Length: 117
Image (tube, rainbow, N blue to C red):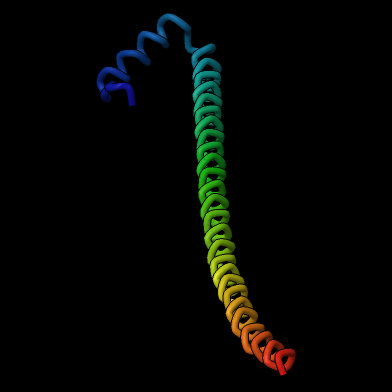
């Protein structure tokens, strides 16, 4: 307990019996036992409260990490989704331009020939 062995405990009890008296000793021991039990109970309450707070803080930290990872993945998915769309837009914009450039050429030369004739 507090480094008190059997012989030391007997000496303390004998001194307490002499100082306190045989009538008051049982009542004092009960009070001491109740005090120690209350002290242990308070210690357990403090320990459980600290454990709950640590668990809560850890779960909040894990939740923040998961939220950050989820936001990062959503952003990556959004960027990946936008890249093909922008590539498709670029390819569709370049295709009509080629067709438009090549299409008016023969028509205008054909019209020019018709006008000449």
